[in-house]
Amino acid sequence: MTRTIVESKTKTAIIGFDQPFCVIGERINPTGRKKLAAELEAGDFSTVEKDALAQVAAGASVLDINAGVVYNSNPNPNETEPPLMVEILKLVQGLVDVPLCIDSSVPAALKAGLENCEGRPLLNSVTGEEERLEQILPLVKKYNVPVVAISNDDTGISEDPDVRFAVARKIVRRAADFGIPAHDIVVDPLVMPVGAMGTAGLQVFALVRRLREELGVNTTCGASNISFGLPNRHGINNAFLPMAMGAGMTSAIMNPVALPIPPSKIAEKKAEVEAAGIILPEDMDDETFVTLFGLGSTLPRPGKEMEAIRAANFLTDNDPHGGEWIRFNKMPVKAGDEGRGRAGRTGGRRRRA
Image (tube, rainbow, N blue to C red):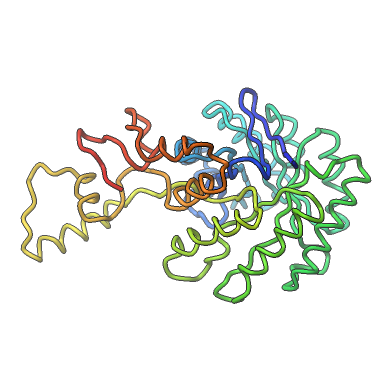
């Protein structure tokens, strides 16, 4: 069986066909997050700290670290990204014990991350572009780390799944020329939005099967891409992930956390309830209120996608006897660990899913 080993100083995560699905937390990434980008440029790492802790509490086995901020004061990422990557890595390593994934399009930032990361991180990423292969594969070999291989090349991203498979095969073969084994290649076959391409899901499932059967490699993806631009994205993601797992996908870069309900949403709902003439107890706290009306939680907690993944692990016998499924649903939450499960005690009340 193909197994990709990713390690921190004290913990090992195994990506493999016979292993529980590996969730790679994506939240530490300023792309599309203006507030986080501004914080990082200002030297404020409070959101990074919160995201790291919440993702691990929600069940992430690996955390992706991306420092791709375009500074207003200096728009050259080759200068700004390497030191920021090192700073974030050191911070996160001091907070959590899970392995890390060093994520950057800047080779210097990847190198700086490899020089300062404890254990055996996952490197994200290499593509089939010739320049990228020549820059990244020597780093992978030198530091003896696994790497994410993205199935696009100098011609861009093809809508033809056969072309994307050919790019993946090319990367695996070129890696072998450097002495990098197939078990250290985790292929991202590229998930297209199903809203723009109706066959996107079918393409990924077929690609994952080919990658497993013909190349013997593990696979990953940006899971939320499948639902981009559509309503009720969680509903689509919840269906997609177990189906991808059934096809042989072994990991995903995704958000494992259901974000807290913001105070503005709570205030809106309370106004609706009051307008409807419903009288609530004066001492009802916000957590009880949002639970009562099915809004979610005021605290970070595992998202519905994590529930779907854990159920699929159980159904594919990668959770022997359902131990993790039972713990996920039944174990009371300890103080300070409210994000660890769907069911738990908060404020003296039993929370319902």
